[in-house]
Image 1 (cartoon, rainbow, N blue to C red):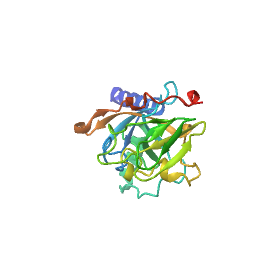
Image 2: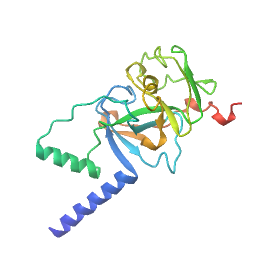
Image 3: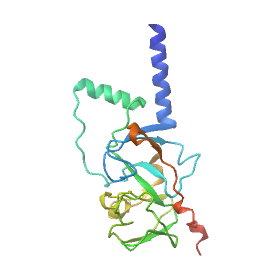
Image 4: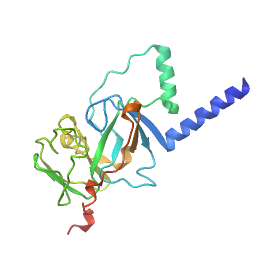
Length: 220
């Protein structure tokens, strides 16, 4: 019995350390990232990006609400015991976060980038049009009649969902305190893989569609 208790305790501590510093699971609650991510998918997020590893345009990230992006949601109804158990398992990382105060989007603009769209044609980053059809939801325009023209401030990101007409992302949050930008210090990490359901398992790599985009420092 003592050995069993010790093994369980060590496993819980290891899980908590992993969740705190390395990896964390999140539940996808909305359609904003379809068809890359479906409602109900579980994704694994690396907390080493940003940090030891740099963020890149095209990465899918999880971040805390910068303020005013999310509306109030009804918490999942559980009994008193279920609430305590679920909270404890989520705390140590054995259950995915419900994502009630987090969002998941794709990085389109890094600090200093000039990002524009006329609402019909492609998104243009630092003067280079980006062909995003590889990951946009079927039939979606790059900005779905929402033109914008922004320069990403230092320490901020411009993000968009892959299901552009069903994603309230940087474009529709320009009137919030964040101005539509995501502070880097609110980024939980980069989503690396869909791990559940198994039928939708996939690696979330960095697409090469941004390879031709010059850095902001290279634009005169």
